[in-house]
Image (tube, rainbow, N blue to C red; front, side, top):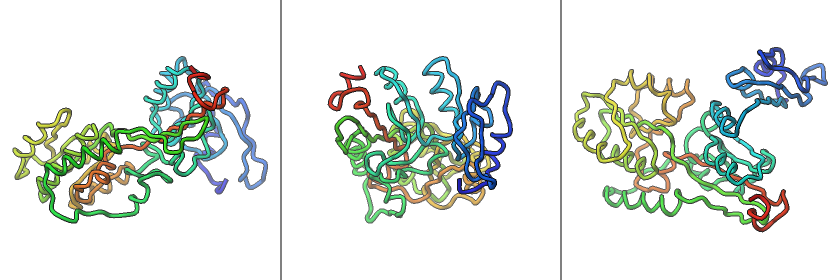
Length: 328
């Protein structure tokens, strides 16, 4: 390990909670305690210290489950979501797991390390990610290092068409760009479960509408938050009512801060949010997108989506051509 003062790891090693035991006991092989032999803690429960914390060490925590559904529920209860793996020959189990587990890199019938650029772009979800388009080795990674702005004025109808085109041509698809015999390596985009648009007094109606259009196109659940004294309140109310599943919250900034933990990301139309909002976001590890919304959907829609890489090896069980012959 790079650090021998890992307090979280030391606590997990020194403390066994009710029901826990060591299947393989921890043992450091050097006096400085940099090298820990692989160890296995048995009987770990959801909510326990070892379950909730990233330890960055060769300590395997084993949690017993009664069903695959329960295992998915336990895994998704974690604040983190970098990688996840499943070993199963049952197609229904694989589909259930694939569509329910919350992690950025999914591995089926193979190890869960060794992500390869382009084949398995690497990056997570929840507290294992920050913002959209962040997968290293993926098609959007360069965008994380750039700032974009609209070059010309735009027409709302043209933007709506552009967003629809970006969705249909790029973001709605699950594709395998590597085409390797014996395995599938697909890449897909998923909508955020919850996102907030905080509208400040100086934000334009057009910018707010672009965010609503983007959230609607990506099927991301958006809450539009603004003061009940906003000068364009009635117009914004009418716009929100046009979109199915979109909600409106009339609240002060202090009230908004108190609800920020319920969102996966926050969208603003400008950098006019107070320092208190950014401070709360830093405490939560919450991404705030505060650049002006873009008319180009290929870039703007990234903010409303999560990326997921799925690697499925079916040659492991006897076929390099059709997975249904070996894993039906």
